[in-house]
Length: 174
Image (cartoon, rainbow, N blue to C red; front, side, top):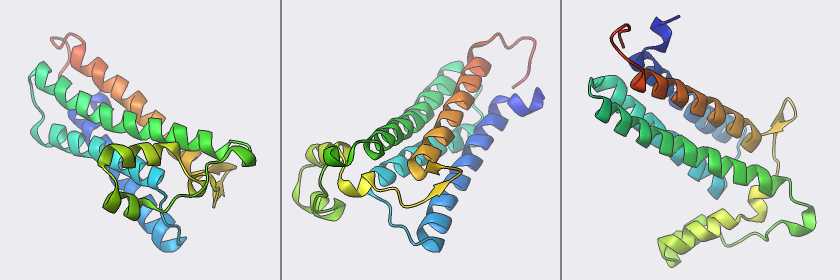
Protein backbone atom coordinates (compact mmCIF):
# COMPACT_ATOMS: atom_id res chain seq x y z
CA UNK A 1 0.00 0.00 0.00
CA UNK A 2 2.82 2.42 0.82
CA UNK A 3 4.23 1.98 -2.67
CA UNK A 4 0.88 3.06 -4.12
CA UNK A 5 1.07 6.35 -2.25
CA UNK A 6 4.57 7.42 -3.26
CA UNK A 7 4.89 10.90 -4.69
CA UNK A 8 5.71 9.69 -8.19
CA UNK A 9 2.99 7.01 -8.25
CA UNK A 10 0.34 9.53 -7.18
CA UNK A 11 1.47 11.90 -9.94
CA UNK A 12 1.26 9.08 -12.52
CA UNK A 13 -2.22 8.30 -11.16
CA UNK A 14 -3.28 11.93 -11.76
CA UNK A 15 -1.93 11.75 -15.31
CA UNK A 16 -3.87 8.52 -15.90
CA UNK A 17 -7.05 10.12 -14.51
CA UNK A 18 -6.54 13.06 -16.87
CA UNK A 19 -6.24 10.69 -19.84
CA UNK A 20 -9.30 8.72 -18.72
CA UNK A 21 -11.36 11.86 -18.07
CA UNK A 22 -10.43 13.47 -21.38
CA UNK A 23 -10.95 10.21 -23.27
CA UNK A 24 -14.41 9.85 -21.72
CA UNK A 25 -15.28 13.42 -22.70
CA UNK A 26 -13.85 13.32 -26.22
CA UNK A 27 -14.50 9.78 -27.35
CA UNK A 28 -17.59 8.70 -25.43
CA UNK A 29 -19.55 11.89 -24.83
CA UNK A 30 -18.54 13.80 -27.95
CA UNK A 31 -17.87 11.21 -30.63
CA UNK A 32 -20.04 8.28 -29.55
CA UNK A 33 -22.95 10.10 -27.89
CA UNK A 34 -22.72 13.13 -30.19
CA UNK A 35 -22.79 15.82 -27.48
CA UNK A 36 -21.08 19.15 -28.09
CA UNK A 37 -19.44 20.56 -24.97
CA UNK A 38 -20.95 23.76 -23.59
CA UNK A 39 -18.60 26.59 -22.54
CA UNK A 40 -18.58 25.42 -18.90
CA UNK A 41 -17.66 21.89 -20.01
CA UNK A 42 -14.75 23.30 -22.02
CA UNK A 43 -13.50 25.22 -18.97
CA UNK A 44 -13.70 22.04 -16.87
CA UNK A 45 -11.64 20.20 -19.46
CA UNK A 46 -9.03 22.97 -19.42
CA UNK A 47 -8.73 22.66 -15.63
CA UNK A 48 -8.34 18.88 -15.88
CA UNK A 49 -5.64 19.28 -18.54
CA UNK A 50 -3.78 21.85 -16.42
CA UNK A 51 -3.79 19.39 -13.52
CA UNK A 52 -2.56 16.64 -15.84
CA UNK A 53 0.19 18.84 -17.24
CA UNK A 54 1.60 19.68 -13.82
CA UNK A 55 1.24 16.04 -12.71
CA UNK A 56 3.08 14.88 -15.85
CA UNK A 57 5.98 17.24 -15.12
CA UNK A 58 6.06 16.06 -11.49
CA UNK A 59 5.94 12.38 -12.48
CA UNK A 60 8.56 12.72 -15.19
CA UNK A 61 11.12 14.72 -13.22
CA UNK A 62 10.21 13.43 -9.71
CA UNK A 63 11.85 16.45 -8.03
CA UNK A 64 13.47 15.91 -4.64
CA UNK A 65 13.11 19.53 -3.52
CA UNK A 66 10.08 20.16 -1.31
CA UNK A 67 9.77 23.65 -2.77
CA UNK A 68 9.57 22.34 -6.36
CA UNK A 69 7.14 19.61 -5.32
CA UNK A 70 4.93 22.18 -3.60
CA UNK A 71 5.07 24.47 -6.64
CA UNK A 72 4.02 21.65 -8.97
CA UNK A 73 1.35 20.58 -6.46
CA UNK A 74 -0.06 24.11 -6.34
CA UNK A 75 -0.26 24.28 -10.13
CA UNK A 76 -1.96 20.90 -10.27
CA UNK A 77 -4.34 21.79 -7.44
CA UNK A 78 -5.19 25.11 -9.11
CA UNK A 79 -6.16 23.25 -12.29
CA UNK A 80 -8.39 20.69 -10.60
CA UNK A 81 -9.74 23.28 -8.16
CA UNK A 82 -10.74 25.40 -11.15
CA UNK A 83 -12.41 22.40 -12.80
CA UNK A 84 -14.29 21.50 -9.60
CA UNK A 85 -15.41 25.09 -9.10
CA UNK A 86 -16.72 25.32 -12.67
CA UNK A 87 -18.43 21.93 -12.29
CA UNK A 88 -20.07 23.16 -9.08
CA UNK A 89 -21.32 26.25 -10.90
CA UNK A 90 -22.58 24.02 -13.71
CA UNK A 91 -24.47 21.78 -11.27
CA UNK A 92 -25.98 24.88 -9.65
CA UNK A 93 -27.18 26.15 -13.05
CA UNK A 94 -28.76 22.78 -13.81
CA UNK A 95 -30.73 22.90 -10.57
CA UNK A 96 -32.15 26.39 -11.05
CA UNK A 97 -35.91 26.65 -11.56
CA UNK A 98 -36.73 26.89 -15.27
CA UNK A 99 -37.76 30.54 -15.01
CA UNK A 100 -34.36 31.49 -13.50
CA UNK A 101 -32.14 29.78 -16.09
CA UNK A 102 -30.13 32.38 -18.07
CA UNK A 103 -31.09 32.68 -21.72
CA UNK A 104 -28.82 31.20 -24.35
CA UNK A 105 -26.21 33.58 -25.69
CA UNK A 106 -24.64 33.80 -29.13
CA UNK A 107 -22.05 31.10 -28.40
CA UNK A 108 -18.43 30.79 -27.37
CA UNK A 109 -16.92 31.30 -30.84
CA UNK A 110 -18.73 34.62 -31.23
CA UNK A 111 -17.69 35.79 -27.77
CA UNK A 112 -14.03 34.90 -28.42
CA UNK A 113 -14.09 36.79 -31.72
CA UNK A 114 -15.82 39.93 -30.45
CA UNK A 115 -15.23 40.40 -26.71
CA UNK A 116 -12.21 40.94 -24.47
CA UNK A 117 -11.15 37.77 -22.58
CA UNK A 118 -12.35 39.10 -19.19
CA UNK A 119 -15.83 39.67 -20.60
CA UNK A 120 -15.80 36.25 -22.28
CA UNK A 121 -15.07 34.64 -18.89
CA UNK A 122 -17.84 36.69 -17.28
CA UNK A 123 -20.30 35.58 -19.96
CA UNK A 124 -19.29 31.93 -19.66
CA UNK A 125 -19.48 31.88 -15.87
CA UNK A 126 -22.88 33.53 -15.84
CA UNK A 127 -24.00 30.47 -17.77
CA UNK A 128 -26.50 30.05 -20.52
CA UNK A 129 -29.53 27.94 -21.24
CA UNK A 130 -27.42 25.32 -22.98
CA UNK A 131 -25.39 24.82 -19.77
CA UNK A 132 -28.57 24.15 -17.78
CA UNK A 133 -29.73 21.41 -20.12
CA UNK A 134 -29.34 17.85 -18.86
CA UNK A 135 -28.69 15.73 -21.96
CA UNK A 136 -27.68 12.47 -20.33
CA UNK A 137 -27.53 10.87 -16.90
CA UNK A 138 -25.79 7.85 -15.47
CA UNK A 139 -27.06 6.43 -12.18
CA UNK A 140 -29.26 9.51 -11.87
CA UNK A 141 -26.33 11.95 -12.14
CA UNK A 142 -25.89 14.54 -14.89
CA UNK A 143 -22.52 14.94 -16.61
CA UNK A 144 -21.56 17.99 -14.47
CA UNK A 145 -22.54 16.11 -11.30
CA UNK A 146 -20.37 13.16 -12.36
CA UNK A 147 -17.55 15.58 -13.16
CA UNK A 148 -17.85 17.27 -9.77
CA UNK A 149 -17.56 13.90 -8.01
CA UNK A 150 -14.56 12.95 -10.19
CA UNK A 151 -12.81 16.27 -9.59
CA UNK A 152 -13.53 16.11 -5.85
CA UNK A 153 -11.90 12.67 -5.69
CA UNK A 154 -8.86 14.12 -7.46
CA UNK A 155 -8.71 16.91 -4.87
CA UNK A 156 -8.58 14.20 -2.19
CA UNK A 157 -5.62 12.67 -4.05
CA UNK A 158 -4.00 16.12 -3.92
CA UNK A 159 -4.40 16.11 -0.13
CA UNK A 160 -2.58 12.77 0.00
CA UNK A 161 0.17 14.22 -2.20
CA UNK A 162 0.48 17.23 0.10
CA UNK A 163 0.80 14.86 3.05
CA UNK A 164 3.58 13.02 1.18
CA UNK A 165 5.38 16.32 0.53
CA UNK A 166 5.24 17.87 3.99
CA UNK A 167 5.63 14.87 6.30
CA UNK A 168 9.08 13.95 7.59
CA UNK A 169 10.88 11.93 4.92
CA UNK A 170 13.56 10.22 7.01
CA UNK A 171 11.46 7.11 7.67
CA UNK A 172 9.90 6.78 4.21
CA UNK A 173 11.04 6.90 0.60
CA UNK A 174 9.06 8.71 -2.07
